[in-house]
Length: 95
Image (cartoon, rainbow, N blue to C red):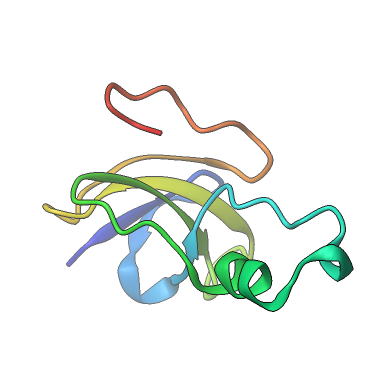
């Protein structure tokens, strides 16, 4: 069973969580100023790296809080997790 490190509750089983997609994507300051192509790019274009990836996670069946995590997409191993609003921890080769 995959264990996910919630920064508030500690290691918990994967079934308690929901992935919310890529982390650290800033909403456009003025969405009304975007054309359809730019808005579609904001909504749908995401990186899909092989290796370390920053993701948003919801501890749906636990504390109910959102947090960010660094996960290796090759091994599915979680490297670290951190509270929303905090910067991504420095990683060699990371974004």
